[in-house]
Length: 339
Ligand code: PLP
Ligand code: COI
Image (tube, rainbow, N blue to C red):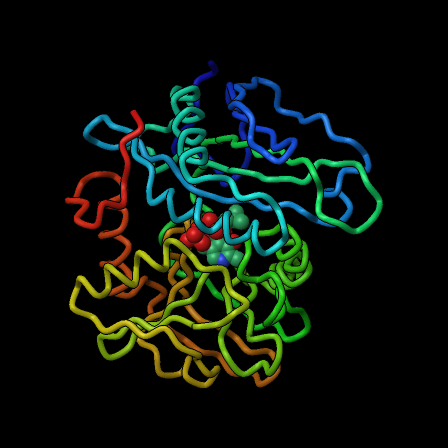
């Protein structure tokens, strides 16, 4: 193995040794297979390629200072994948199978788990695809569920640092009764143009309002939004956002810290009242928001005047990663030791 520069990894893809696969045929899941091949044999008429019948998940494995390797709330990701499966008519991957495959793929790729000091992690990417060959628009009969892993660094360059966002009104990533609450590739395809436009304008990421009225906060790119004011953690309630495991955990930690938690519609104007704001997700953990610009009105909602993360976002971030790395007691039973 070449010497890895663990400290300077990007959020990219690096080949590891093994992935694990399981096929759904004749109405049932088969045995778990270990594979060292990075490619998948796929029929050109496979449903996933044409009609987007595919879903994915994302988690991390953490090499901890006590020498163990931990994963975080993987049952929540299993449940979300099951919800996605129901949403786009795919068979559900049972939680036990999901966890067994995660544990196996991590153990098989142990040498690819970055050291604690590097700040990098092993990203875990489950993928479920409809593989049957057909041209009619119907659910596939057969499926492949696989999990690969790859070492990753921070999602945004600079890690835990503030970023500027821009409101997009010209593109929606998902519709109120669409697939935004599911982790399907189509939502990400729908976001590529807005993301490219935001980057061209010099922003880190695009910021979405609700697709129907453009009145309420939806998501920050591929992450959930939260705002902090008056010792309260406020996060949007919307049918078109992905239920984030990170956000769910932060809501609990905010409560543990004695804060109030509100999950409700957030009108755009309310952005003016937040003392801090952040984007949250597995990849970035918390990405504090410096400001959100609205090109239509010329208004800039500024959350960080000095460009630094706010005190409550910093506290929540430190608390969450301390649990993930087994440094603080895991009072909610969120982590599982894999190695
Ligand atoms: N929102 C979207 C659209 C995402 O892709 C993700 C990433 O999975 C999140 C939010 C954050 O979810 P989680 O915290 O479960 O990673
Ligand atoms: C996240 O983990 O927060 C993500 O948004 C994953 C992304 C790479 C799709």
